[in-house]
Length: 363
Image (cartoon, rainbow, N blue to C red):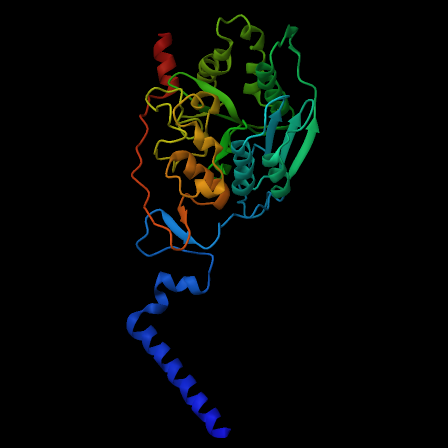
């Protein structure tokens, strides 16, 4: 028995010596592949470009509800609270709506995500998943604003436009449309009284609004709402007219391309620029999908894809979805699958400053 123990001890010492020799002569200890022994879920080969290999999908944790964790002492004007408005009665809650809420919850870590609704909350499997995964949702029922300064608001889209401004003016925070996926933390924009994003050459959009409580700019723009219904194309009010109005105000910061571009309404971007194209969005805070615009294109199916398909979809929408789900744009392959690398991405055409363009148009 003692002899057997001695043999086992000698073998153990020999194996340990062999391992140490391997480490010292080959540098194996520092090899990135070694991480697979300690992180069995995912590893990234040393020469990998834009992908990783995972046994299972590496979902990011959502810990929203404590907005001060990990934040600098910088003084923020805009509260770290998200506003989402749902006035739809017959519209289904889509997968991209889920991505919109999941992404801002996991990336921005807001204190609250306030869901304002008029008649009923969203429903369906994607809404159920949203409620289960996001702990900082708060539901607030409100009446749809029916008039502004004595002028009736006839349709739900315009009522939503007004409601988002009313809510943000009253409490401050960040309004996001339900088709806006957050790509990175936007604390750097919360130091300004009001921030909007340029959407086309001459337009600014209210699909993303960051504003302090009592925003002077939003109050002044709200006074323009009665002119809304005198326009031949009312949709221009919160786009082109807003662009002109914002360009004359120093109370608002206009992000030229990091909020609302790419945009399928922009000829230079292309109709597939938020779905099936390959575009560099590394500097973007958000991706605004515009599903009503792209649904008539030849590739509407990507908006119906879910986690397992989107993990290897090498397009701008696939990248945004992976950031929302996994916290990284990397393609996700399972062991044994055929691997491919991300293809090159194109840069967007840049326009002159919107303020400069509108100033020159007015000259």
